[in-house]
Image (cartoon, rainbow, N blue to C red):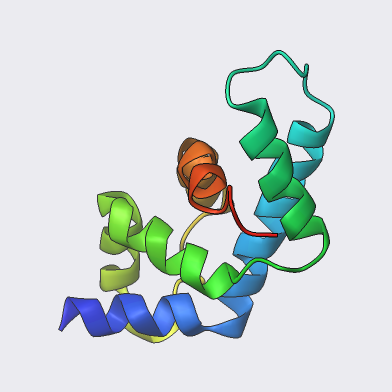
Length: 110
């Protein structure tokens, strides 16, 4: 069952830590971006929440996996690895692409 493989990867502490680290890099970049960047207020708010460790990275990992067929394929190729075989570059690409979605979803969270 593929979905169980995805859940196991998203819940894996090492995979979630990788997601958190990659998000930290993205958040640092957002904190330093031009304030006129589209959606900057929500993007910055999300970055600040992540800096305070107020983001559930396992939930974001699940979102990234659910969204991207490449991540799903990599996890399915060896489910026992729980996502450790997913290249950082793939995670960076997916999380970067979803950043505004996450930022908008957390826009009203304090």
